[in-house]
Length: 254
Image (tube, rainbow, N blue to C red; front, side, top):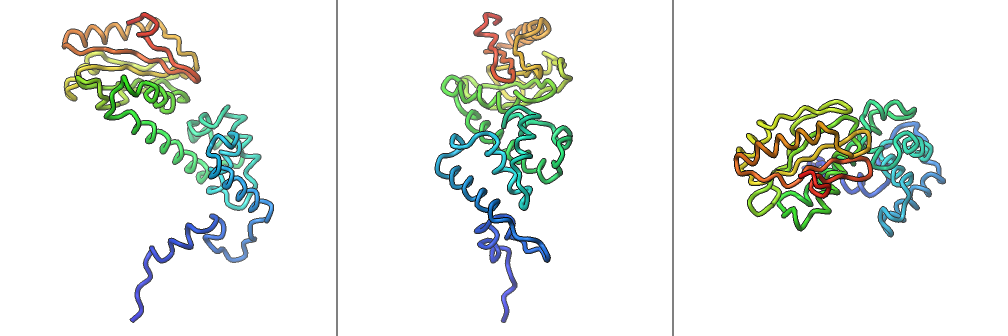
């Protein structure tokens, strides 16, 4: 009796080789040896030394290998960096803007967005359900990863329990390049729903400069008044810029 072929039967051959030989295409040319050797060397360097062993353009090459299996991707990696500044900027770029770069199609956008989503999920896992006091640097890293390169403003709230453990992180509103609508009543209403005892407000400035505007300061004061009335503590308001963040608490604004 012949056993039906299962997906698991193909796993070894699917993952044991480079992406190009995994699928035989009639008439397709094999990957040129110089590209095959280059890709192998990059992977070996990455496995031996991690991300610190590779500059941004080579890290991008590793990501692009999967999407473009039979072409030299170094020029494309450099074009992406020239357009978006750095590795993080490339990953965070909106799909429509990515596709403005010649050579970028759906496959490349998908690969980049998978890596971006994985980075966000990893950073979030390092702070959720942990005490904010003991994971403050990880919290700042998460906010930078999630928000620093957005091209429109986003307002998020971090909800904490009585032990200052982060119990929820929720986007509350999205806006334009320089404004996001926030309603203090909705902020405190959600805190009560989650039984949160404290809040940290976070929003980004797409301009890259985290200096708070007067409207940022006024909105923060309104939320603080609403929170104080219900016994909820507002710990801080973080404004995320491209390369740094600003804390209302540290600046004496709270």
